[in-house]
Image 1: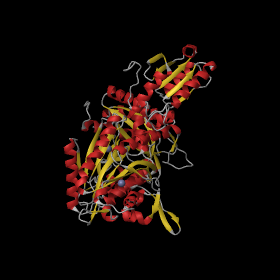
Image 2 (image 1 turned 90 degrees about the vertical axis):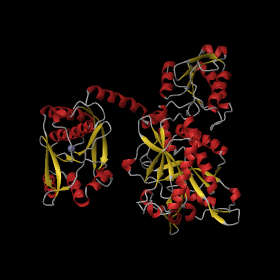
Image 3 (image 1 turned 45 degrees about the vertical axis):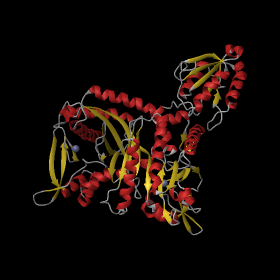
Image 4 (image 1 turned 90 degrees about the horizontal axis):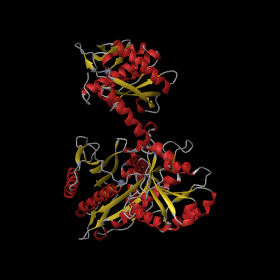
Length: 624
Ligand SMILES: [Zn+2]
Ligand SMILES: [Zn+2]
């Protein structure tokens, strides 16, 4: 067992290590109740419930107990027993979660259990010679677990491990169920690999958007407001405004118009759109008003369709491109909430394009090109595009309009191929109303997620009578493109925080310049510098350069350090020499400096950098 790659052996080792951790926990907390313990990409976890909470300090104790078990080289002993006997056994051992699993297994079969737990090793049901359903149990020392296997031969082969994280997890992911503690462990064949992974995780922690957002004061959650409902603080709002300003510019060039629509609508609108009843579990409960039900909107589309329908359209008017940063609300299980990545209310870079069939390919390409433009600007290189197609075997999920499915999918393939963009195809991932391209990006933390989609929709035009008067005078249905290249402010800004490690390019930085007077007698000059920056006319959301003056009593070095922690791109230090010579000394985030330069030269540099949205941030760059 010395295989060092991500081979099935490593998987087996990690899985076996999870058993050993559970066994160790049982020696320390004899009444511990166990949930499930699957492997992860760098180890494993196990969900447990003990009477006193397991703390960070306990992890070392558990590790010690695991090492003892490793030394003992207990064999993993397999036994096959009738499911009912296993239920009885787990009942006598007071393992209600295992009983729950066994009952799920008995009544619904192993696929249901895998789906419920997202774990393919939880258990499998088979039948013995007499046709009676059986399950497999594995015993390691005194610990017996319900499991499908396979395992390493004995507990001496579980490799190098470290328990590194504690979290809460509701049983079967449902907040109505008891909350267990999830203990995460790392597991590798070799010690050096384990140490490298520990180091990597340390580095990643520093980039976690939740940590950076706290330092940069981007957003705040307050219990009294509600879970998953962020309060955007001034610094976060500045980033939102710059992104909106950017989108406004780019979309204007592409012929979009802006609208503003309400956050709620009557139930009837969502019946028409198909959100009710199909999307109901993801929506907030209705608000009753004048004997009618109103819903917080989970999507902006129906509102935009109503804008399209607000006047008669002719073939000459098309395409109509309706854009809005639209606030929507979706019910996410509280266990799924994660900083800004998963929230219950968010603002989308939404737009809907209404066009004729002969225009759709070009419009689709323009949207893809817009994505490419953004990705280049933000230096996003690690992304992929997926063409999501229907799975026609799932007749209840996808409409049976095969002709339209084929036609729209072909259009997307042609559009993508002409542009030379590589993409993968996936069946069963399409929206219920049409095929789409999903954009998957990888954050600096290595997690992949869908940041945006570009969808073709041939259903909404029927449901909402979205049509136009054709050349021949007949009413014809339009095609709708749904798109949101910058996704939601919440997810995109969380991504940017991790992507840049908090070091935003100057145009996005909430505070662009920190002015640091060395002592009180330099404050007057500092104010003049601030006013000059403030008054500079810059093409950006705030219309001027964003600077703050540090008037605290701290020493200069401390002020500089604080500005560095806040990751401010430029620090302007003002002392006697600067006041006398009417210049400034500028320190950059990378440690380089511009010594004794006129304020006007600094302003020119900043103005160019912000307006061109470049990331030149070293003193020795061009022009210096
Ligand atoms: Zn196992
Ligand atoms: Zn839409």
